[in-house]
Length: 281
Image (cartoon, rainbow, N blue to C red; front, side, top):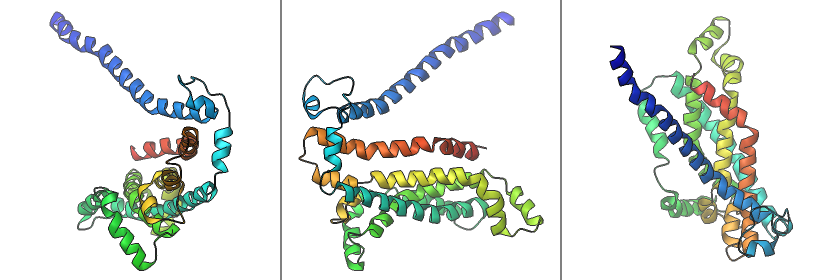
């Protein structure tokens, strides 16, 4: 019996190291896939224009800020950057303002069509944005929302709202309803119980959901390029104004677009970890 058990457990034990090696290799490949382009972007952004145009490329940056300084002083960059901040902020507010109540209702109430509603929320991401671009442009021109911060923010909100609803739904589902019921027995109504008991527990997750909405709006380019002319965001401005620019300016523009989003997520990483900790409880 013991020999059979030993022989039977041999393949399982032998497969253990290989599975760990495979997992480690997959993690390394994924990290390189993400980090190498960012590293090359930083190296070329912080190198002189002459170094960017030469081959072979440098492995380390020269810490030359000529390209960044020229890009930031490029006509229209400042206004496009400010437009991106405004659109992303409005998108974040609208996404959380609509997504958090929907997530709470899905987690706390049973109603007819609940599962269908959750599917429909996901279906909003099933339609490619280029397919909707022309109808949206015509509609916006008719109602006067074309080339406006609010009009673009509404489109970005439709992109970010499914994430906000599903993330907040998982957060509220992870909070036992008994906590609210205990607050009700102590004299709180539903709103007071939510503010005093539930909101402090889910606030890190809501902050993380807001960050997702901000980053989605910050990086979106197609709707901004189609629906705006005078109020272009930074991605749309880069797509239009720097298409024929020198290579070093393209790297500088990419860094200005990518690095703030990475920094923003890095600063709130503890809220992201708290979100998953709450959601998986």
